[in-house]
Amino acid sequence: MKDIKLLDCTLRDGGYLNDWEFGYSNLISTFERLVNTNAEIIEIGFLDERRDFDINRSIMPDSKSAGKIYGKVDKKNAIIVGMIDYGTCSINQLEKCEDSYLDGIRVIFKKHLMHEAIAFCKKVKNLGYKVFAQAVSITSYNDEELMELVGLVNELDPYAMSMVDTYGLLYKENLMHYFVQLDKHLKEGIGLGYHSHNNFQLAYSNCMEVLRYKTNRPVIIDGTLYGMGKSAGNAPIELLAMHLNEQYEKNYDISQMLEAIDGNIMQWHQKTPWGYSMFYYVAASNHCHPNYVQALLDHHTLSIKSVNEILDKIEEEKKLLFDKSYIEELYYEYQKEQCDDSEDKRKLVSVLKDKDILIFGPGSTLKSESSQISQYIKEKKPLLLSINFIPDDFDVDYVFLSNPRRYIRLMHALKEKRNSNVEIIATSNVTKAKGKFSYTLNNSSLLDKDAAVMDYSFVMLLKALKGIGINKVSCAGLDGYSEEQPNYASKDMEYWFAKRNATLLNRYVTEFLNSIESEMKVKFITKTLYREDN
Image 1 (cartoon, rainbow, N blue to C red):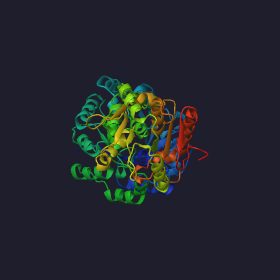
Image 2 (image 1 turned 120 degrees about the horizontal axis):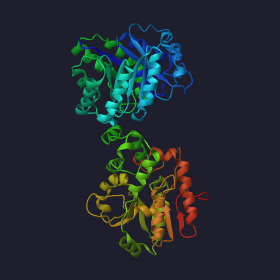
Image 3 (image 1 turned 45 degrees about the vertical axis):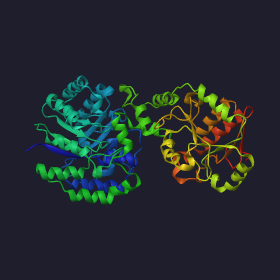
Image 4 (image 1 turned 135 degrees about the horizontal axis):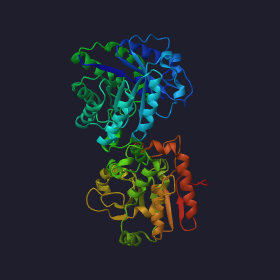
C-alpha cells in the first residue's frame, strides 16, 4: 500500500494567530488528542532562540523546552517534530536526538539561503534527528533552481523534503509540475511532502491531487485542525483524514480531531478568524507577499482595481520578499498620475475667485451644529464644497474628490435628483466611470510625500484652492479625529485607522494650517480639534 503520512502542524502554524500562546492546558490537551488521532507526524511548535521559554507557548528557545512542555505526554507511535526557520535557532540550541523529546526537525528556508540552510540541516542530522528540508515559496523556483536544490538535498539525504506553497499560489498544473520534478530527481527513499495554504480555496483539493499521484516514495501531507493557520489558513486535517480513511484504507480517529477543534481550537477562530478572504485572494492572484496588499490598503485611498494595478508593477524578484519602502515608492508614483490641469484651473478661478466658500467635512458636527451651519449659509450665501462625500442635510455645489474608494460610494448619491447639478473637482488619480469630471487637478502637485499621510484630502483641497489664488475659506464638519468618539456624521464612513492615528492626523493638519496662515485664512464655524483656540 502507498506510504502516506499525515502531519499535523496546528501548534506551530496556528501559533501565528495567537503568538503561539495557546496556554499550557490547551497545548497539552490538543497534543494528546492529536497523538490519539493516529496522525503519523505531529509538529509541536517553533524552535527560536530569540524567544524566552514560556510554558504557555508553542515557540521555544531550544529542544530541551519541548520536553519541559510536552514531556509527560506519551507520544505513542507518533513522530514528534519541531520547526526551525533557518537563522533563528543555532545548532548549539539542540541537544542530541537520543536525549530529546523531539524525533525530528523541520527546517524552512528561502531560495537565496538554500546552501546555508542545507549545511545547517547536515549538522541537525548529525545530532541524530530526522531532518525535513522545507523549501518555502516553492513558486519562486524555476526548474534550474529547483534542480540545484535537489542536488543539495540528495547529498544531505534527509528523512523528507517538502514543498511549501507559502502564499497559496499553486493550481493543480503547476503544483504537479513541481511535485513530479521532485519525485523524479530526489534520491530514492527520501520522503516528499506538501504544505498548502488556502488563498485560492485549493488547499484540500491540491492535497488530493498529490495523493493521487503514483510514487514509490513516502508522501507527507500537512494539515491543521480546522485549517488553523496564518493568512487564509491551511488544509483542514480532519478533511484530509476523512479522505485518507475512505480512499486509502487509513485509520485516523476523526472524532479526536473534532473534539480538539471544539474544545481547543474554536476559541481562537472566534478571536482571530482565519480562512479564505479577499485580502489573501488579492495577494495570491498577484503572486506577491500579503504585506504588499496590506501596505496599500492601509492608505485607505485605493480601490481594489488600483491596488491590483500597483501590485502589477512590482518587479518579479521582489514579489515574495516584502520591501516597505519599495511599495511606498510605487504607491507615490501611482498617486502622482500626471495630467495637464492648466485649463481646468483657469475655469475654477473663474467660478471660485472672490466667492465665499464653505467647505464641508463629514464630521459629526454637521448634525450636532447643523442650526448654526444653516444660519451661516443663510447669512453668507457661500458656495458649498464637500470633501469626498455629499452631506445628507445640505445641498452642495461642488465635491472635491481625491479618494477612489469614496468615489465608489459617491456614485449612487450623484444619481439622486437633488445632486444632478453637483460638479466634481477630482484629482487625477480618480478615474470617472464614464466620461470626464467637471474639473481634474494634477494629483502629484497636491501630495506631501514626506508627511505620514501624503494624500490627506482636506490638506490637498486647501493646497488646490491656494494654488488658484483663493485666500480665505470657511469650514464645517472638519472636526479632527478622536480616539474615542465617533468621527463621522454617518457611521458607514468610519475608518478604524482614523481612531488609531487620531493624534498624528490632527497634528499634521494643525501644522499645515499654521504654515499657510499668512497666505490663506481658514475659519472653522464648527468645533474642531485642528485648532487649539476653537
